[in-house]
Image 1 (cartoon, rainbow, N blue to C red):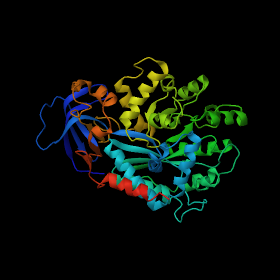
Image 2 (image 1 turned 120 degrees about the vertical axis):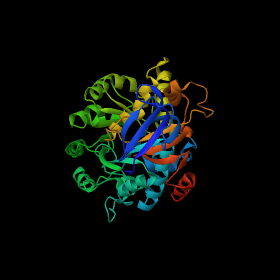
Image 3 (image 1 turned 180 degrees about the vertical axis):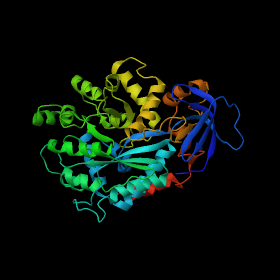
Image 4 (image 1 turned 135 degrees about the horizontal axis):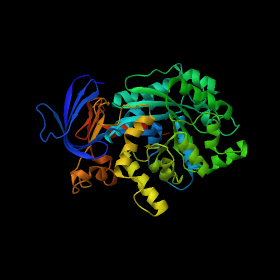
Length: 447
């Protein structure tokens, strides 16, 4: 991360509540040191960012290897569970080297989409069959290095995945996900070290994948380190039904009983919840990460995001399976899905949706000082073109509305991380030929 002082002149900047024209931003040591509105002309020597500059976007939920499934899973019909078998087959072919190459290209694609930090929900830990690599964290280290080479921040959410279902051992495909028990999981991931661009968090894959009596071990590991803790929650009704049959309660209630819920915890999807679950999640301050493009792609359903937020659950957004990588589309889909479900409009303002995609997303990943254009914050931001065929026409003062309801990832012109251009004029500065890198990495995983 750069320590070179820089000055940026933002033609238009979203400052959290409104769009301000002509904003000068000074950066030193990777942080914003001053924000000066009312500068109609660029100061001498300033780097000029034409368009609308937002804080860097946070992708709070990613499975990088799922990018290899794009389009190939659109042939035929089925359910989440049939999709999962195709996903397992791809996971079987990953090695530390092939995963590094794929993740580097995927994270570069994210940077091109304005994403400056990713939460990688990582559970492919070992070799096929479950044998640890010589470095037990070889796969996680590959992801951390891939993010560094792509120029973005990462929170590696090292995931406990110990069983195939309630009381069932891992399947053949799942053996490489499992450490055997939560104590062994904790020992392995304790060896992972944080870096300037990387934080280490924890995840419970799901209540079906971690036995109830071992949930507290994962929660305690995160609590001791003040680390983020994420969990797939109530994505499928089948999981809810099985949890009730075995434990006599919902997944959310089970997590609460074992100390998993709380302000540093984020439930991913939170789709099929009872009214009591919503109150429990919101009342505990547990966050909600919605992944609308994946939830619709997998036919999961539409989660009660508005009700959760109303109860006190902060919202963040993720691209999850990477059917597309476009956080603006995730933000737009959150509102539009709710409109379809309720047949009413205006559940969130554009500013609220941008906060979910920026400050609240970064906070869910443990980057509390990121996601705002203000003095003291990390100098991570992204600039959208306001003169594309999608964004031309509306006045700049409606930039937040244009960003959420009209722009796409294709409108990202610049991405800056720690004061350094990672994307300049639509081209990645660190990874040449990102489409070619993606094509080669995906081809290497084909049978």
